[in-house]
Image (cartoon, rainbow, N blue to C red; front, side, top):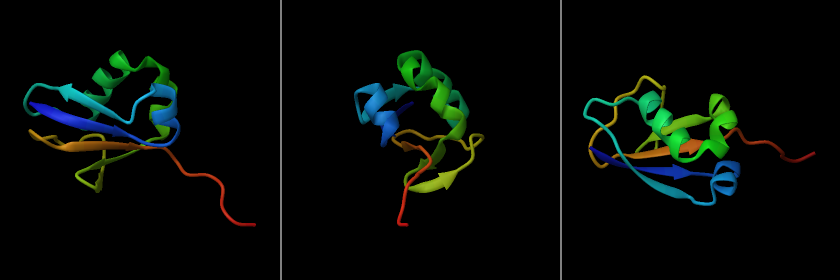
Length: 83
């Protein structure tokens, strides 16, 4: 199956891209997708333990199943704010 991975903030900066097409076997999980993502983009490996995941704009756990055409977003923790 083919999905689109979207990277945000520091992930996008480190990877040098905001979007990555990814080919996965059927019944793949978010966690399995992450394994392939770090093979293609090893510069974001150290950040993945802190990342939140969303499939088609809904937050999910790493065990969530992906389907053909899904958009998987990797969202790093947000810092900063008002004082």
